[in-house]
Length: 65
Image (tube, rainbow, N blue to C red; front, side, top):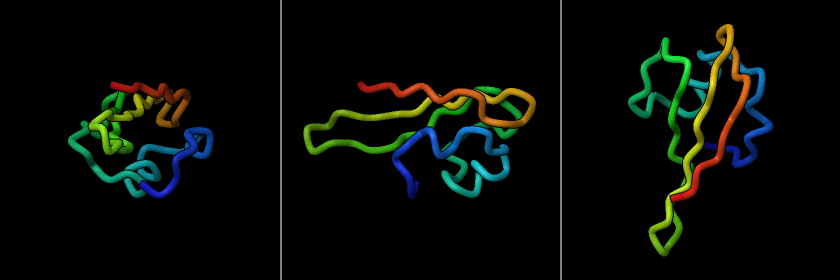
């Protein structure tokens, strides 16, 4: 993943997102995708939950574990 700002990905299509982030075990036609962004040196993970509506990204939620 090249960008770390989720606002850069809003209104992109599924095929554009697949080219940017790769497959990462997401079902192409699913309306919700999970994307691992990074892991800190302490082992904390940062993930994005990407929501699609009408084949475009409508919302990205950031989840920290």
